[in-house]
Structures are given as C-alpha cells and as structure tokens.
Length: 190
Image (cartoon, rainbow, N blue to C red; front, side):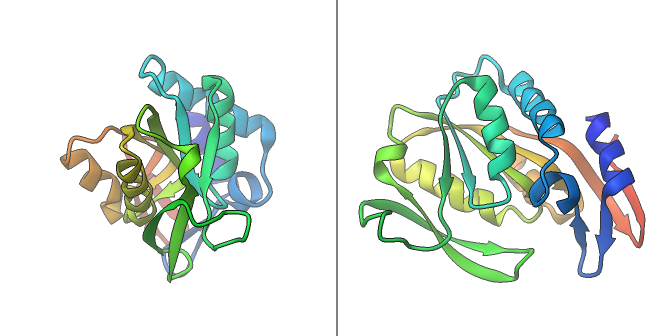
C-alpha cells in the first residue's frame, strides 16, 4: 500500500535493535483517519472470505483490528497479555514471545468469544518473526475455528515470519513489506 509506505518514510524512525518506530501514527498516537484507510484496505483484501471475527493481541494491533472490523461489520477480539479477574478461567491460552519487548507472555481469550463456527482473520500492527501470530493461530485452533488468514500493517519480510506462514499455505497479506532496514534507509518489497 503506497500510502502506508510513504507514511513510514515520512514519519517512521529506524531505531537500534532493528526496531521501526511508528508510534506517531500507528500504535501509540493513532492517526484515526489513516487507520480507517488501512482498515478499508484490509477489508478489500479479504472481502468475500466470510470473516466472522477479527483477532489481535493486546495492545498495538487493536486500532487496526478495530478499523478492519468496522468494515467487515464483525466483532473484534483481542487476546489479553495478562490475567485479570474479569477474564475468568474458561479461556484459550498460548505462549508468545514479543520481539519488540524481548519478553514472553501468555495470551488468553475467553472461550465464549471465539467458537468452532467462526472464520477468523488475525491482524496486528507488525509481523516480524511471527511469534504473536503463531500464538493467535494456536488459539483459533483450540477453538476449532477456521483461520481465514493473517494481515499486518507492516511486515518485516527479512525476519521470515510471513514467509513461514505462506509456506504452510496460510494466506498472509501485509499492507507494507520491508525487505531491508539499514540505518535510516528502508527498502520495501516491490
């Protein structure tokens, strides 16, 4: 998506540790108009697939997931990274390693929010090594639901997560795929 690539080049910052900072528009300070443009793009990519739920991980993927859910007219569900009394014990759980935080989490979704009749689209702000998506896919499997596909705003193509899913026949669509980040240079996949 050309508009996202241009926004990344204009407002994104490459930081040490292979981190792309896009908090100014995507995942901390959210440009709501732009987010709904991204949500519409996700909808256009997966229109007609029968999506009944959109699933993401707390917290950075919520804005894009909600924007896409708006266009699909379906609920958005997010996996919590920490236990809470209001979550209860009747949950699907999966282990996830966060590349950005270099920390392991156990994510959880209440069983009443996803079931075997659902067709689930996984959405997140970034797809790098694929750990978060693996955890979400695990939860979809536990629920007996159908995994429709995966969509990320930004995929770090050189880290292999998206290609790993693609090699297993899972549909992956990313709105911008970065093939290389060197200092301030960002190269997008053509």
